[in-house]
Length: 258
Ligand SMILES: Nc1ncnc2c1ncn2[C@@H]1O[C@H](COP(=O)(O)OP(=O)(O)OP(=O)(O)O)[C@@H](O)[C@H]1O
Image 1 (cartoon, protein in one colour):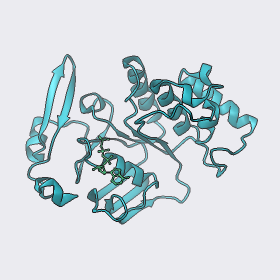
Image 2 (cartoon, rainbow, N blue to C red):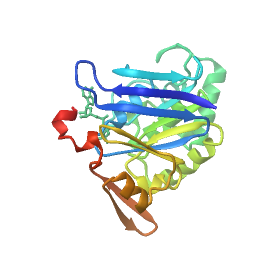
Image 3 (tube, protein in one colour):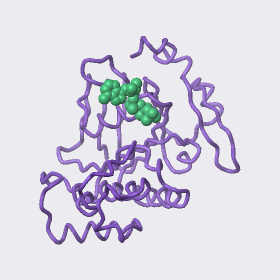
């Protein structure tokens, strides 16, 4: 079943040249799409447009139904230590009930939030202020927030930035489990690790390339002409991307694409 159809979409910021153009993508039930690309390539801008936080500059995002349930784990760049909300309140704010951040929630919603926090291994933090949390703890709490409305599409922007290796592995296993009942779109810099879990790959570097498979073989790379560097540390390769040569958009000097 189709969840979202994206046609000829351009994303970016009002009054500025588009960051990424020519986006064509259909997200289906139980898709697991890894989004990769270099710093500043436009991954977060695309993701924010997908969630509705930014309006499209051109083109369309068509959800299959008006009440498509989205869960979103944003990229965490810094932590506001003075943020006053409790962990439970933040998790419950993921219930898209129009109550806003300071709305009142019932006992059922509170219990649901507590159950999720327990499942993700941070139940002991339920009463704490989010401003007091470490980066990894906050990331777990925001994951609960993204999951509480039982989304049909879960969108994650670099979910492993602050987490340790142990939780990273647990997180990928949890996502594989969740993918049995929801589609996932996940931004990550670590293609080597995520390609073990995702089903297809999108590469964003001011332009948009979709690979319908999770395997980026040397042959595909040659056809695709994507300069990718794989450095293998044991079984898990590390990935570094630069530009896409042979692509009209990527070959243009940067200032022309901005
Ligand atoms: N609010 C904004 N207004 C104008 N330009 C912005 C804004 N936010 C980001 N940009 C610019 O948009 C471009 C794409 O940024 P974006 O954060 O989408 O890249 P990214 O691929 O997610 O990068 P990273 O891997 O570093 O997170 C960058 O040049 C960035 O400076």
